[in-house]
Every structure is written in C-alpha cells, then in structure tokens.
Length: 201
Image 1: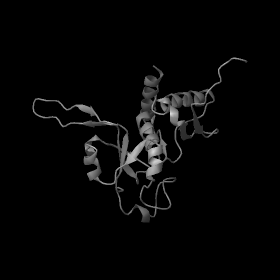
Image 2: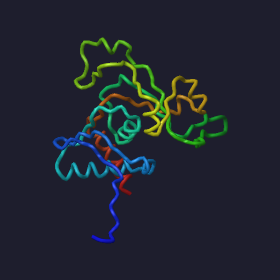
Image 3: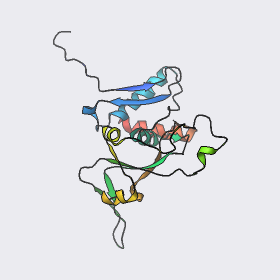
Image 4: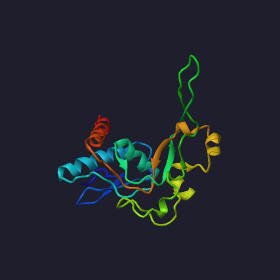
C-alpha cells in the first residue's frame, strides 16, 4: 500500500524442505551482533514443527559462529577430526587465595579461533569411519584471514597468540569444524528446548 514502510530482509535460514536438516544462516553485515541468529533458529524450529519435519541434524559446517550456536543449542558433532578453541570477547582471571575468579571484557572485543591438532593423527588413513564424517582434502582446518574477519573473528596461529590477546586456553570453548551436528537423544532435545525457551522470553 502507498505510504507503507517497505519490509527489510534481515537474514535467511537455509534448510532441506524434506527433512528440516539445517544448512545455516545468513545475516546482513549491518544487522550482525544483535542475536538475530538465535531468533531465526527459533522460527526455524517452529516452522519445522508446523510441517512435521524432524529437524534433528545439520549439514556439514565449518563456520565457528555456527558451531558455537549448535553447541549452545544442545547439538553434538558427528566428527571430531577438526577441533578448535573458540574465544569470545572476554577473559577470565584465575582465582587466588581469598579472591574469586572473575570475567573481564577485553577492549575491542571480538571472537578468536585457535585451531587444534586432531585427537588421532592417523585419522586420514583409517579404513573405517562413520558415514558422512570423512572430509576429503587438506587434513588441517584452514580458512583465510579475510573470510574469518568477514565472519567476525580472528585466527590465532599458536598459543603465543593467546598471550598477545590476554587469553589462555582455559578461556576457550572446544568446538569442531568440518562436521555435521545432530541431536542424538532425548537429553540433547531437552537442551535445545531449554535454549529456545530462553530465546523466546
């Protein structure tokens, strides 16, 4: 109608129409950092319920921000060959005698990622692997720094990089790249329900 404000597209959710398998999200750069992915996730699950789609898994993902979101939702990784530590814009201090540990916001806070070696260095030559977990190509989790910055995080090369940012490994959350995620049992489903309940408030 004339004079009616035009609706703006804030982002998109990508998933398979037949199963609800989640492929990811896209939020415009000008709208990032406002928690929109969590709201989009809520609408995604409600949509899948309306049309009786299982919505119990994701496609293979290598984006750290998605991995963090899937973890928070209660999903578990199918493949653990590409671990990394994820750091938010905070660091924790160690507790001392008579004083409790506390969290400090870092200046110019963003997110950092520290790739870790695979838990089993012989994984590439394993004769049997879970279906859907094998990743052909480079055995290292690699992503360009330009691509990382466009997603809102920086890559740390070594543990020395942590010290330069005022971080330590205990500040990081261990996540996994190049893997699909899923909800394997009722406990995992319950964690997602708790997450969605918090988002809907």
